[in-house]
Length: 100
Image (cartoon, rainbow, N blue to C red; front, top):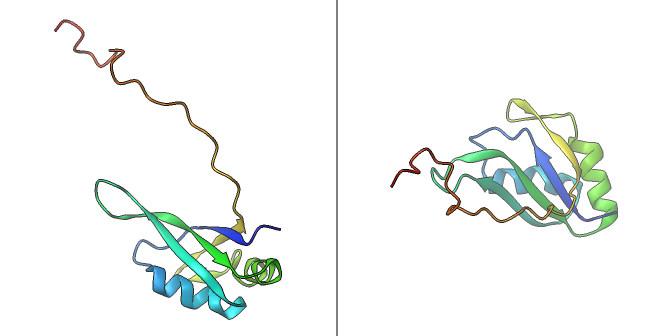
């Protein structure tokens, strides 16, 4: 099992400190990160928590998956590697202003 966990359904007011504190009930938290929008800085409602061992990661899933955290039910499972996305080409037109 991976020690890195995906945590979805986070309330927008949640902080990385509150997330770390909550998951510490399952063991040692190596890191807790909430993903934010680059433009607004607002939480996207999900993040990642890395536990110090596979056993603690499994315990965190059992403790928090489907459970209430600050008023919202969390989805907690093993994080999967990010899929490679094709690079965007902004120079190919299609933006509706092709006449220039």
